Amino acid sequence: MMAPGAPSYGAHLQAGEGATIRICAPAAGQVRWLIEDLPPIALQRDGQRDFVGRAPQARAGMRYRLQVDDHAPWPDPWSRWQPDGVHGPSMLIDPDAFAWSDHGWRGMPRPALVCYELHVGTFTPEGTFAAATRRLADLVDLGVTAVELMPVAAFPGTRNWGYDGAALFAPSEQYGTPDDLRVLVDTAHRLGLAVLLDVVYNHLGPDGAYLAAVVPDVFSEHHVSPWGRGINLDGPGSEAVRRTICDNALSWLREFHLDGLRLDATHALTDHGDEHLLAQLTREVRACVPDRVVHLIAEDDRNLGVLVRSAADGGTGLTGVWADDFHHAMRRHLAGDDEAYFSDFSGAEHEIARAIQEGWIFSGQIAGHFGGPRGTALAPAPLESAVICLQNHDQIGNRAHGERLHHQISPASWLAASTLLLTAPETPLLFMGQEWAASSPFLYFTDHEDALGVQVVEGRRREFGRFSAFAVEESRAHIPSPQAEQTWRRSVLRWNERTEPPHAHVLGETRQLLQLRRDHLAAASRSAATVRCTPADHRTLLLRQPSTQGGDLVTVVSFAGSCDPISLPGLAIAGLPRLLYATRPDPHSASVRLTRSNEGALVIHPAGEPFGLVCLVEGDAAS
Image 1 (cartoon, rainbow, N blue to C red):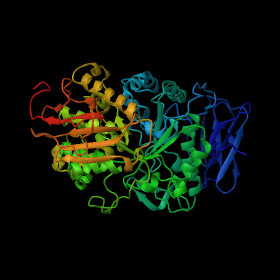
Image 2: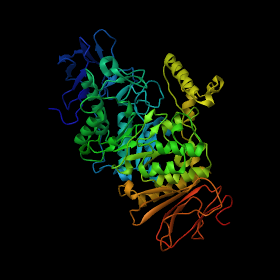
Image 3: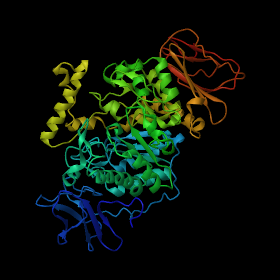
Image 4: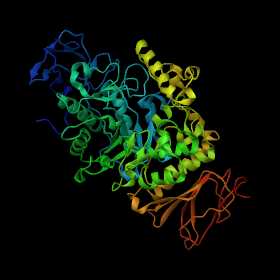
């Protein structure tokens, strides 16, 4: 009997006994296992869909392929590594040979999560697992608690976001070896960092995804997705597809000791079976990895509370869900975006306050762009179930020129927005480089073969034709080509600018805010019933929530100016308030002035007699 979570398909080494293989190939008449330096092995049929075989002489490091009927040999769709690329031979890997040092690691509790999303290929100039590992200490110093890797499954070409994954079980050879990824995770755990991974189960990449060749019913005959035919989760032959997906999730968690997965576009996983794939996945993960905290976080635009409701309460049982409403309302407010899905948002203070108070804005109201009612309440799930951001790979990279929000608004507004993000009761996510307001954009880049590459470039430019700024073909012609090497190179972070103004100042402010969050919010779950976020007036937000040090933590954020004092209902408390943070503090007065066009924020741990806040259109703290 297989151990819980043992992989069902692919080639796997057996201690001292060579290797075994099982593949699902329902349309095949015969399958041969071609291992270098060994005679071909004819696999035996096992049931209606599977083939199995054994190679007593196989050893780690040997390359192999599969030959299905008279087709040219293919790589193993369940391969653990493709050292020569997705079209090359697979390699036998022993995932148990790595010497882990994280035996005492038990994961990161959900209330303590502060996620830092990064793309391995652009996070450092080297673009490797090893180079990213050398930067982990900087992230600990910053104050984040979880690294979230964009997809690392092997993709075609030399550069890619990762959402064109082809060999789903194999870390990309462009980033290093499987053990290089294990070193990254092991080092992170030693430093006190969790590591999450973005995985893609809603579609397969357009090049090199041999799973579709070996298992042709991987695609649904009835469901479609934004990428074409949907993945078959509930039709004939779906058992092997579901097994492959669940095995893939478990392989990352068990073989690489990852602390969780971000599940890409779960709204595109159409499943009308008795148990939704997400519920099955959650159930199997909890059963197979019971000894540490594991986070399963959905990217889902439907705002469905059922995703994070416990299985006992009829929910899916996921840890969290990306809640984009906060981002959309903030960007509408700060940068004025009003097309596509931004058209459903006003960006008004009351809307932003609702996103903070309830986790998201739409909980059943009509959303025009969505085409009808959208969402349900997040409660009774805790607010940290909602993952919010000001930037992520999608919201930057899916802009034509990859500009970040801080490239488009004032530094004061950026710091004010960052204060709200990092003191919110939800789980904050930062995108690599935003902690120092990085100058580099993050563009969409690929390296497909020529014919497919032309289609990608033309399709992307055609897609932007829906936006007024790119209605004219001439403007679309200036959109950077995803296929150009320079597009990728422009997206690489410039680490040396962290010590230069104005980036060094922003980095210092971000560190302070994350330290404040760690001191006052990280140790306890947060409920909507104990949080109050309201507009103090037409320009100012007031957020009040319990501090783990006792009393309430109060965040005040102002984005636009007036000379009038701000009215803060409910903040007339006996005693002197303790100012923890201010974007423009006045250390000589109990009154704090938000200056420079009145854009700014402060955080208070009140114990206090009544105190006032005064905002100025111009001037500085000494005025």
